Length: 220
Ligand SMILES: [Zn+2]
Image (cartoon, helix red, strand yellow):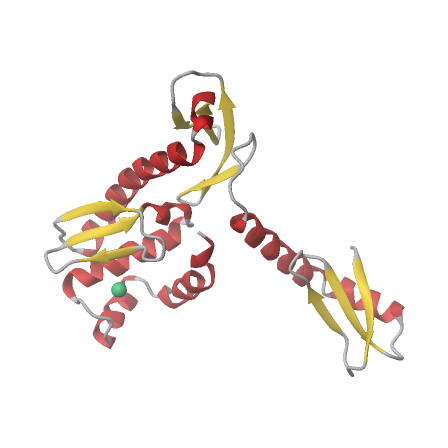
């Protein structure tokens, strides 16, 4: 494991993961490098977990390059981009886990890929909402897909549910959270304790998912 050691006036050893995922060890004067090395070995799994988080974050902030092997996420499943010859714009997800697009799509890749995400979102969110509504006993009027950047879902008094297609870039359990949240709004339109009590009944670990969404939502 690579790391940089900085001597510091602090009394305790500090491990710091930098934004480029490298490790810096702040070592108090008088503490040996051998001690630091032992400490790193002991903390290895924590360090690797943190480094992986930084790398994931960086990946998500990076604009898509639309090159072979680039990973795209659809409802929590990872698909590798595969560019195939073709003068007609065609996009599909294969059972081998490929997101296959024709060369034609590269003329306006963002446009075509977003279009495909919208189609996928419509199908996935319609199906999953029907399943969950059925299981939990809710009735809604319609489902529409929009392109909102920060609002994953909303629900009107008339029972119309809206989702952003960007939602399907998140893990499946987070999508389920947003769907369940909107379903509860069919009955309870505010975020009162009554709302959260009901949500708690449907999804006992909703707090964990909310926390995850707060931390990660801006990355999608
Ligand atoms: Zn809400």
